[in-house]
Length: 129
Image: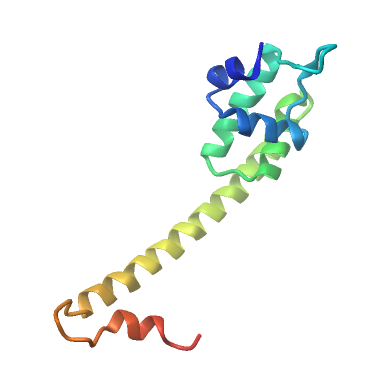
């Protein structure tokens, strides 16, 4: 199967597939002429990686999860630990975004948005850290 077909079946751009190969997440076979020869297992791994990335897992987390997926002696606690760590990071990011939104909403409300040059948004942005 060529990379175009694999891209379509796995739901990933060919560039992403090549990148995943470059960093060792997938290792398709190579034919005598050097072309990639993807197997169904490669497509499955690529789809797995694509789904993990949609959840925001880092490349290293994806590598860990893929290793755990392929390890029949794994303990689900290992998988849960990776997911819990990522969930905590997501929760932290949500808290930061909520705080950012509150501050920005306050600044937008405080700005008259009229013909005058005075603007609390610009004043806040110009503050020293």
